[in-house]
Length: 125
Image (cartoon, rainbow, N blue to C red; front, side, top):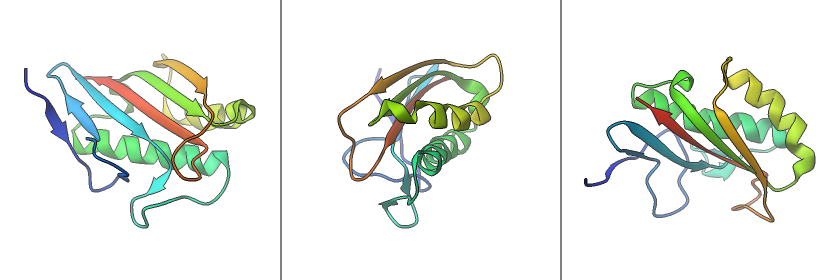
């Protein structure tokens, strides 16, 4: 099956990748850092603002594809500092309702630019 890729005008892009790929049953969304698509820059502020922007980018892509947070099955979160886990988790909890998607959170040594977080999703049609 050929790759069916999707690009959004409402999410930042920093390289040669697709925002999402539709396999027919699942949608794989590339990780989104907290880039403001209007400026192309990482949003100012700490982990709370950056988490909100990353989710805003992801949910915008889903919305353009006719989907919502209720379709999300799996979330991967990458944090440059695991001390930010609790603050990220507060924002995360506001994005979804129970039953929550599965999630993995990983500490990493760095992300693009000044990003403190990157989030990727898998959604099911």
